[in-house]
Amino acid sequence: RVNRQDFMDALNEVTPAFGVAKEELEMVIQNGIIHYDHTIDEILRSGQLFVDQVRTSTRTPLVSLLLHGPPGSGKTALAATITRSSDYPFMKLVSPDDMVGFSEGQKVQSISKVFSDSYKSPLSVIVVDNIERLLDFTPIGPRFSNAVLQTLMVLLAKRPPKGRRLFIIATTSLRPILTDLGLSESFDSEIRVPPLSSLAALENVVNEVELIPKPSELQRTMQMLEQAGFGAQDDTGLNIGIKKLLSVIEMARQEPEAVGERLVTSLMGL
Ligand code: ATP
Ligand code: MG
Figure 1 (cartoon, protein in one colour):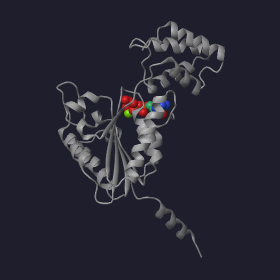
Figure 2 (cartoon, rainbow, N blue to C red):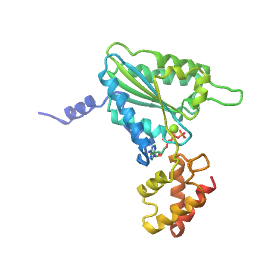
Figure 3 (tube, rainbow, N blue to C red):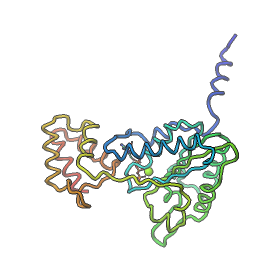
Figure 4 (tube, helix red, strand yellow):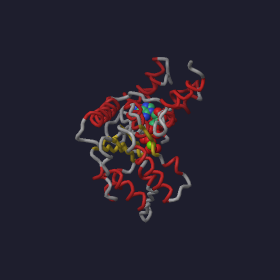
C-alpha cells in the first residue's frame, strides 16, 4: 500500500536539491514581457538558439552570452525569460540584490558555489545579473572588486566537467567598462537590449497594459506625443527603458480623467 510517507518521499525525489529557482526567475519578470517591437522577439529567439545549441551540440559545453543596454531596458527580465523557457534542470540567478552586505570574500564564495553546484547537473543555465554591481564598480577612481573580477573571469572560461553543459547569461548597463576590465573577451556572444525609441513601440505598450482603452483618446495622446517631438528618429526622440515606461504608465493611471495628458507631461519631464 502507498502511504503518506511514500507520497512525500516521491515528492522529494522529483524536487531537485538545488538550482531550480523558478520563483526567483518569476520575480524579475513581474510585469511580463511585452512584445512591443520586433527586437524583443529577435532577442528571445537568439537566446533560444543558444539554449538549443548548449543542449544538443557536444562541441560547445560552455556558451556565454552578454546582454547589454541602458538602465531599465529589460535585460534582467529577458535573461530570466530565456532561462525559464530553457527548462534546464539547473537554473539559477546570481544577483547583487541577494548579496547586499556581503564581504568581498562572501561574494566570491557565493558566486563560486553556484557554479560548482551547476557542474553537478548535466545541463545548467546561470544568469550573472548586473555585473557592474557584482563588481561594486564605481566610476570614481575607478574602483571595483578585483577578487570578484578574477572569480568571474575564471568561471566564465572554465569548461564544466565531462558530460556537463553550461549556458551563462550575463547582464550589464555599463558595456564599455567590461572592455576596460578585460572581461568582454570572456563572452562568446553579445546582444544589445535597446530602449524604446519609436512611438509605435510606445503605443504597443500602452495598448498592452490597457492604459487608454478609448481609441479617440489614444489617438489624441499619440498626436500630443508627436507634437512634443517624441516621434523624431534621431536622439531627440523617444528614448526610454521599458522599466521606466511601465512606472510612468502606472503613475499616469492614477489620474483617470487625464491619463493621456499625464503620460505626455511625465515623459516630457524625464
Ligand atoms: P536595470 O538596468 O535596472 O538592471 P533591466 O534592464 O534589467 O534594469 P528589468 O529589471 O528587466 O530591466 O525591468 C524590465 C521590466 O519590464 C520587468 O518588470 C519586465 O517584466 C517588464 N517588461 C515588459 N516588457 C518587457 C520586455 N519586452 N523586455 C523586458 N522587460 C519587459
Ligand atoms: Mg537588471
